[in-house]
Length: 205
Length: 122
Image (tube, chains in turn red, cyan):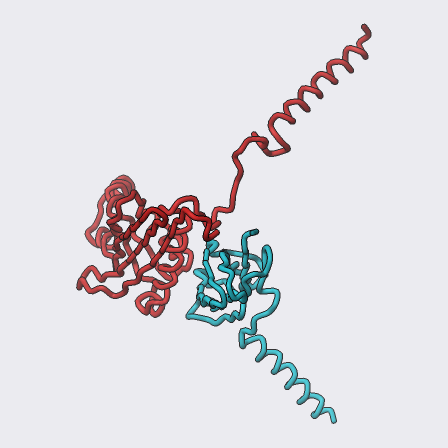
């Protein structure tokens, strides 16, 4: 066998192995394209079950952020107030990550540029430890700046469930409050209501 | 004669500016996916502090059919770039019902919007 023939044979083998592996994994930049896993729209309305889902999380965060931005304590503030997120209690019968709700609101508010946020109390020890590493002497004034918030945000998530043989009705109520920690005064409160109905018949969509 | 032309020109330019400022809803601000079984009856925008607010009315023109729909608002900046969008919000509209919604952008750089209405295939 000549060198040229050997070369062309090995090239064909390499090329065909590449092509075969390409068929198994999909196109360029894709792995496992023939599997059942597909990427969907992260903001799509999800109605797989009546449980608190991603659409509820997104719409709750949007509604309450809009309402918060309209309050005069934020929209008319001389400079963006410092806010700290506190616990939002889950008073429902199911597991709901309430921090996901407040984190999403925090992201939206920070993007608006109208509010500044202080680290959560749960993370305060870590922030404090980092400061101790970087500063030789922590003055009381600096600590005050880190701990003093203008407002705190707290809230509750509640649900009412009712069901008969044909219909299951779930009502969610997410309420948030903006509180002045010095006076304890509730300056703003709003709620987001969600109703979900699961029907065993073919009515609906 | 020259003065009259100038006056006419300024009136025309002024009228166009007024039209632009009044937040008239353009056809390119609405987009339908699927059949238009639920229509966007009207929509308008106004400034709420630093943020753009949009008020829209959806209507199910049919007498009897219950329609499911979702809508989304795309927030567009002065360069025409989509900088944010709302989640798809679902509604069920019974026959002849109108639903009014209000959405506000969370970013101060938003100057325009587009409402997308999607109705599922039956």
